[in-house]
Length: 96
Ligand SMILES: Cc1cc2nc3c(=O)[nH]c(=O)nc-3n(C[C@H](O)[C@H](O)[C@H](O)COP(=O)(O)OP(=O)(O)OC[C@H]3O[C@@H](n4cnc5c(N)ncnc54)[C@H](O)[C@@H]3O)c2cc1C
Image 1: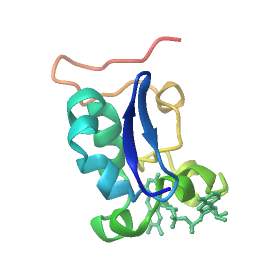
Image 2 (image 1 turned 45 degrees about the vertical axis):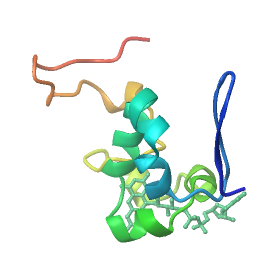
Image 3 (image 1 turned 180 degrees about the horizontal axis):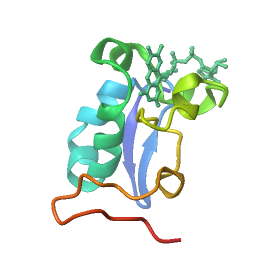
C-alpha cells in the first residue's frame, strides 16, 4: 500500500504513499510534473512528509483549505479555480 509502481497504463500509487514521496518520485517528476507541482503546492513540508495520498483523497470537503480559493488545494479542480494569472505568457484558463 506504500509503493509506487509503473504499470502499462501509467502508475499504481498506494494509498499509504506519502505526499512528499510521490511528489519527489523520479517517474512522477518526469512524466506527471503537474501532479508533482500540485503536491508540492499543498500544505507545508512537515505535513507533506506525514500526509498520505489516501488520506488526502478521502479528506472531507468541509476542510477549510478546500473552500478558501486563495489557498492551493489538491482536491479542487483546476476548472473551478479559474484562470491562472501567474503564467509566463499571461492568464490562462483550462477549457472544459
Ligand atoms: C495546516 C494544514 C494545511 C494543509 N494544507 C493543504 C493544502 O494546501 N492542500 C491540500 O490539498 N491539503 C492540505 N491539507 C490537508 C492535508 O493534505 C490532509 O490533511 C492530508 O493529506 C490528509 O492525509 P492523512 O494521511 O493525514 O489522512 P488522515 O487525516 O489520517 O485521514 C483523512 C481521511 O481519510 C481517511 N483515510 C486515511 N487513509 C485512508 C486509506 N488508506 N483508505 C481509506 N481512507 C483513508 C481517514 O479515515 C479520514 O477520514 C492541509 C492540512 C493541514 C493540517
